[in-house]
Length: 147
Image 1 (cartoon, rainbow, N blue to C red):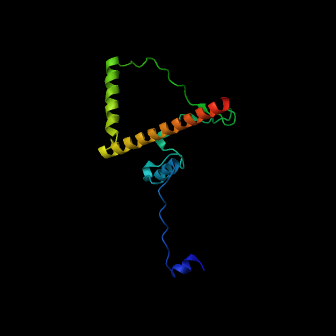
Image 2 (image 1 turned 135 degrees about the horizontal axis):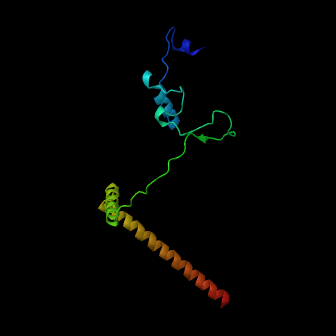
Image 3 (image 1 turned 45 degrees about the vertical axis):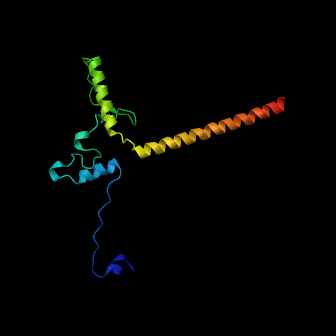
């Protein structure tokens, strides 16, 4: 019995819409297929959108070794160095960034702070007692062994 027989005679089921793409490549492919006719990529099924083509391209004449990629043009040289901001400007920027990060912090409530502090103090007391007990046991053992 086929799927068409089970669903009823003559009724065609609509194809389900594809799930949301998970990978970046799948999203690019979906975007490329959803473009209007005038905005299609020039090479047809390219993985990258037309504005983001890479600068490196394979050598067309076949003189390069297998897997080798040659650049189309030389990288331009930098003629000037970027001027470093003053010490005061850098300090102000640092303080602004710190303040912006502190605004993102989710501060605990008073009840949470009391709970966290209690847990830490109980844990520290337990560890002090454990270390003291082990110290006492090893001291007695060493004195018993070596007299």
